[in-house]
Length: 226
Image 1 (cartoon, one colour):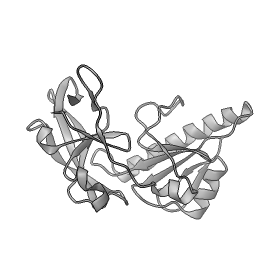
Image 2 (spheres, one colour):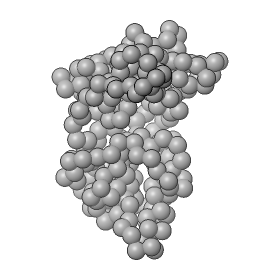
Image 3 (cartoon, rainbow, N blue to C red):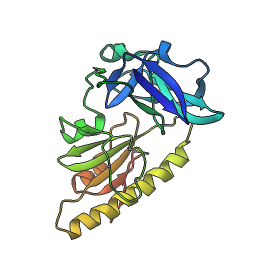
Image 4 (cartoon, rainbow, N blue to C red):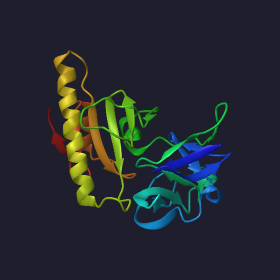
């Protein structure tokens, strides 16, 4: 069975899940009753179509704000996950039991920043060993140029000002890491934060190609140097 759990309680259980961008989506009938309540906020994905609606996750008397979402309407390419539910913010989604679960894989379109960079392959939610970037990385990594792309959305857990402050802190952490790489004679790792499916500005792309860290949440690049 595929299982989603948080705070010691099971949120969802299903024999069938869809894997999208390295994230498990659960069918709506597999969600435990009363585990989710509607939350504020929404985000858009240019290839999935429609808007993601967020939910708070309830478990063992605690609430994880905006930790689940679904697409009530989708573009044809994403129709298999319409109304299915995915999780983040510490909610663990995995196979439980003997053997290895094999979810159905829904191929995704190339995301906005990668497309703008001319990249045809990305590594979703990479494991990172960068001081200041502890916890789940919600975006992807590209190889050429070597860069981290973080995707923010107002999910009900954080408002825009909080996300802007978070992105600046994370950009500074990657910039410091890039400085250490350069000191060792290695290629710098860039970073950019964007809202949902937004395309970055030309100035932000140029900085990213040079291994800079950029905050581009308002379509005006803010360069964070090492």
